[in-house]
Image (tube, rainbow, N blue to C red; front, top):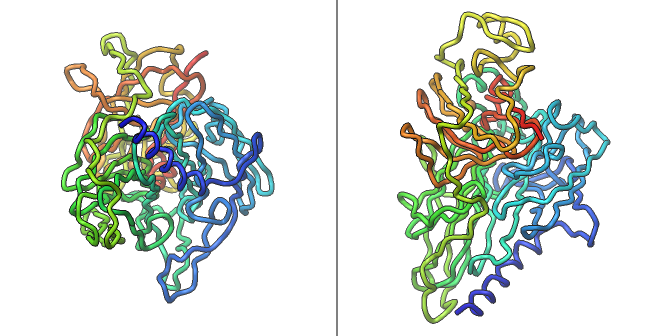
Amino acid sequence: MLAGAGALAAASLVPLASRAAPRGADAAIVLRASSGRARLAGPDRPDTEIWGYGGRVPGPPVVVTQGEEVYARLVNDLPQPTTIHWHGVRLDNAMDGVPDLTQAAVAPGARFDYRFRPPDAGSFWYHPHELASEQMGRGLYGPLIVQERIPPPADQDLLVLLDDWRLDRQGRIDTGFGDLHDAAHMGRLGNVLTINGAREFAIRARARERIRLRLFNVANARIMGLRLSDHEPVIVAIDGQPVAPRAPRNATVVLAPGQRADVLMDMVHLPGKTAPLMIILEDGEVEIGKIIYHAYDLARDDPLPAVAALPPNLAATPFSAGDARRAEIVMQGGAMGRFRDTSMYKGERFDRAGLIEQGQVWTFNGTAALPKQPLFAVRRGEPVAILFRNDTRWPHAMHVHGHHFRELDSEGSVSPVWHDTVLIGPTESRTVALVADNPGKWLIHCHMIEHHAAGMATWFSVGV
Ligand code: C2O
Ligand code: CU
């Protein structure tokens, strides 16, 4: 049984590894941010000019095994400055890719080397953190996969990056970035959905295979679900961190921008079966492809045993809410939202109209965009409880850099599920618990990228 599982796992590495950028023993993976083309507008229309790493969307998978170093060289061939942020990775602050907080933005023509050893196995991703609405909206993103030392048995390990593009009538990327109407509503919602940069996606497998799917929502603003119709997907990790195996409702995995889920799915039907793959939106659903079984092959005689939990990265340490430093983020603004009489922006005071003139429509605790002072400053290892209070009419995908966190309920007990990005619905309040054990200056922001650009950001500092 064990030998069988090992053999399976080894087979599953091949597709991921072979799609990784080529690299020598100590050579960097080159991530060249440049223009390229993708078939976004449909089969009989010309390709769309995009921006991508290596000119491709998604960018090349960066794949390491837990314990190995990521060594990636960003080369900026864009007409504007950029950086790379490694979303969800508990890395050294200097490698976090946040302009003004952790590094200077990389100028056109310049380069920057990122080197770090991700502590956690799991599914992460990389994207720019400068002018991100435009740069991500044009296609700059890619997966970062940290393989478990002993991966769970799976016959295939598939990447599924869900994106939402806004194209104009000619099939070009709509250039209305920074639109304040978008920013004050949901963010930049698009009109074309893709998986891995294509409008169609097929899962091809034999009956009785077990497939690992790594799902990512890389859209600027759209919350999306993927429905694996007629199958019984099991979620084994959320935001890169293992969870007790759980079946999502209606076989649908719903992700807010920034979030990921690892899913194991058995091909339980007879050879020749097909089933639709649906993207579920707030107001409808779209067929994006199919699950297609081989016409007659069976992967094995007997079905595999039930899905087991992945080994945890993070200890389920008790969190004593009573000892925790308390912080609060009250989110305000947006369309139909409440504003204070005056709000701060870059150290100056503005009324609502003045704030909008500055391109800012959201505030945290009455301040739009990064304040001079951190939300909180703690010593390394201090427990912190952050209350997110959504006093707006819109959902927000709150992302914390450099740390994972767990939700804390009103009785002070901690959920077993770790996240790096949590969706907070209109008028909802949630408290998250983290141990601030990673020194540096860390961002907290909404991952609806236009909300971030229009004010939703703050930061905290952790001493050494
Ligand atoms: Cu995925 Cu601060 O970002
Ligand atoms: Cu938001």
